[in-house]
Image (cartoon, rainbow over all chains, first blue to last red; front, side, top):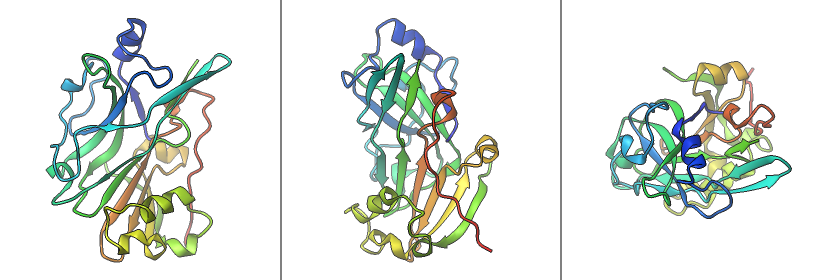
Length: 141
Length: 99
């Protein structure tokens, strides 16, 4: 139950119809970054400092986002993301720490939430990092 | 902020039935890793908490598989977090003690 940090602008962007968080209309992606999220001001992917797109880190990863409604609750699910380092440290990085989710379909790549690994990590060649979304990414009532 | 240890490093094969099968299958089916890494039954596993809040909840959210070759395979569990709502059910998280 890693700490879930919602970007404040997520709700605004949802209400402004900049993003679509229902069903599979929009494509949502995960990124690894080194800078701590600023949930009150960060709004788009460009506000984050990602690890480099090398050595098994493609820059972004589709999380297979989907959501559905039951009664008055919408539940979002996602498929685990597995990064495998190849040819060097994943993203040529020893300072990755945060994971964020954003809407790749929106014109500005608007952010949804972030998770803090709690410490910097290095994924060496042949090692893996899995982002496990479990049974649900979030619920909204 | 360092991680807090939750469960000590211990052989996976001695925890059979406790480790979710999808954790095991994810390694077995990953063709991008070394052949030894695709045999998690030969690995050791440890669990940690990423934060004070997770430690207080008592649910580990980081599992690290240690292969005999020295490589590590990390799983960061972010689903069903507190931010998912007050009624969200936490995912099952394996927990063990060594005495």
